[in-house]
Amino acid sequence: MESLYLLIPLSLVLAFVIGAIFWWATRAGQFDDMEGPAHRILMDDDSPHSDDKPE
Image 1 (cartoon, helix red, strand yellow):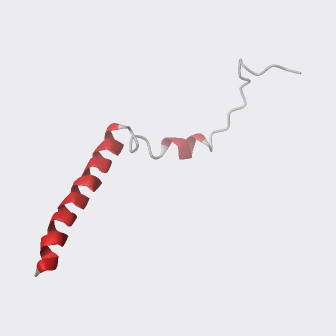
Image 2 (cartoon, rainbow, N blue to C red):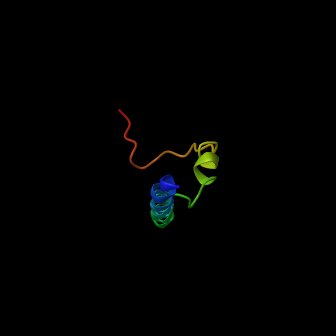
């Protein structure tokens, strides 16, 4: 029974920390575009870039 006095507050603190990390990740834009970079790597870009300088 005494272990519940430790485990219940510990689980509440852990749930709060996980929720805070998830909130921070969503506010920081970690979950914005999951498919864009995957499709961008497959695009064939043959146009020369303006910052490319011939040597």
